Length: 156
Image (cartoon, rainbow, N blue to C red; front, side):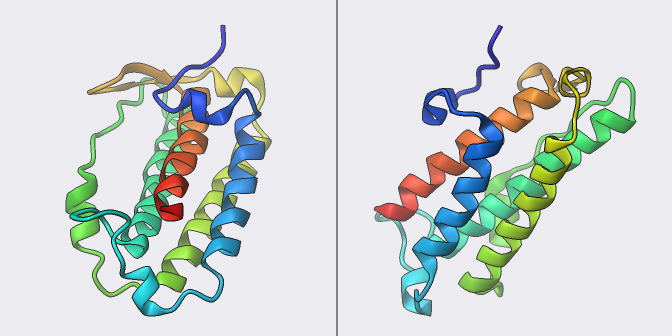
């Protein structure tokens, strides 16, 4: 059975690790040459700025990569929720280029881990207070689709 997340259709049937690698390059290319004003422009009225969206991508890589690592190392691991708005509110001094670098580095670190996992590793499960039982594979698919979701915001 194929892994399904709320972002699955954004993967268009592609391997999520290929999507992750492409998304990192896309964000780096897209933002090359952006000045501070472009990074600090919201993607829509009342929405996060491009800098905040990219910082959020880095946060998500950190949080979900941690969850995957904990599940792989801790039998019966239970993930904790995090509030993305509370996290982003504390990141007021990171620049746009720093956010891009943080996202690219954390995504690459996660992808390197995920690339080396066996099918059994990817099937390792954990509990989550909102999603119930999820697997490392679910995290991989969610991360790739989540990136694609936010890249669409950066394009607008």
